[in-house]
Image: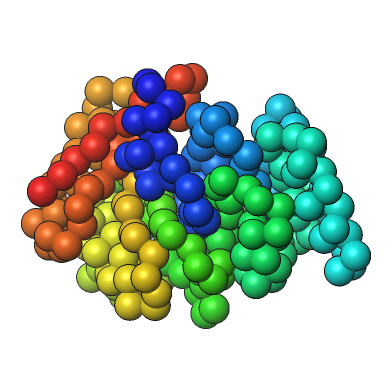
Length: 251
């Protein structure tokens, strides 16, 4: 799809975009970096696996305050800069304090900074834990991600991060098949919490709608969500397998 349309749909023309939830956050980050014509920073406020090879022109790890100057210097020479905390264990990088990312967004002059702001342990759906998400001060957009592939699967820890919490928030029994209405209720509850905590625009993204069946499932979730929370100005149905494809669902 057109790069400009993707950026507009996801509220990612400029500023700081935080990506939260489960079901393809890193794919969304990579797609936004590729689509944006300007200078882009990619970072995280939580521990996470490295972004796929080829995402970003240069990667920096910050292990002391002085290394922040390196981000500013490198950002003058490269379009897409990935900056994180140091390595932590096998195939994990530490996140950075939210205030540090906000300061570097300004100091480095990034047109857009995209931030992974929580973890999901590679699951398809999640409920936040205490202290999550770790949003960056001044964030302009929060993309709230769920996977269409969760629908029809049992609500358990193979599919969901914190399934007990999801059950409590949605009224769905543990082990019960996840329905579109389950995901819709979760989106509404989480979006209300995010909206209460700041001024960032919250855009739900129902991701992994990678075939006609999954796309129909995602649209059912979107319609149910809009019925329950008309304050959403849009919900995005997306696939990032190959070329990005999105459908904008509006009230």
